[in-house]
Image (cartoon, rainbow, N blue to C red):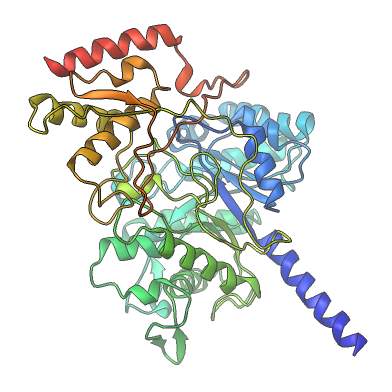
Length: 486
């Protein structure tokens, strides 16, 4: 029996190690109050997360990742593609500052440069169509010139809308006709440079945009009616989507090009299908689905993926939907949202951020004596929500069951907290008041949060929400709120 025990142990160890190597997280920074990078990096390490994908090359974040061994994918934002794509000198300068320096000086384990982020989205109307490949090529050349071309590879995170199926099955997969030629050129470049194809796959978006989408097909429980593609059965959308891409690559002569899943996840608020239970079910299902390394029907190999995302971001655009600010597996303050076993910790549970500093326990709420029909109420709520975050309000959201006063108080408090609890941020004309009694409901998942203390970065140029002296901010807020009542 001893050899059986040893064999089982080796299998379990292999599965755990594969999970560590195969799953990373996206670390976004579109937030009014970022956690200090050292705090986040400690959280990554304590959770056994060995890979992180960034959307830029923030100095403070990269410095904190130094000497940790964590694999890093740095990003070049879309608005920089024209610069690095139009000038070899600009590309070399970017690589020297954001890659070479961090590798040599801080020992950051940078492995990829993401050139742009979903640049071919249909909503961009072709703005980056002809500059993405030149940017990709220039950055690759700059990496080679810097002597790190074999260590650091380029890629372009693309949305799954760059390909489609001609027959609704994965086997009909091919690249979108309107971008077919540019896509083939990029795929050939990636293949020739031994770089991976990166794709972002979101079953939630399909459910959000299509009321007829079969809910069970978004998850990994095997409860959905399978899609039969010539005898190959697909029990979930992820496998079908990834194999649609694999067929597209194969059809065009690049069947062996490595694929990275750059983003995959499920939001927890902002829509009736964006909730804690669905997010836990999806992300845990995904982890279980890939933990054995069996891949998809067409690509039965381990899947390299980055969960989206690590932490909620309260300043993300909500044009796609209110859910955009709630993708994190952790809340804005690094606290755990729901049980999730990444297979990377001894306890099998997520470990929250340590040492987080919060502002004082006080809230801004609607004044009890203020009538609901006060003409200042609607204007004040509109202003507060327009300058803070009210995406947890509305049908099917975590705070969707609040009464009228609760909704108004939530809006006021969101603005108050985002502005560091400045007294001037709770001076909505005759309708608001500061309280030390927590207005959070005793039932349900709705929370009236206390903001974390603002983080001031000493290098890299980021000062979060505290870039102006607080007295000046206070004066400006008073002026703005005065305008509201006019």
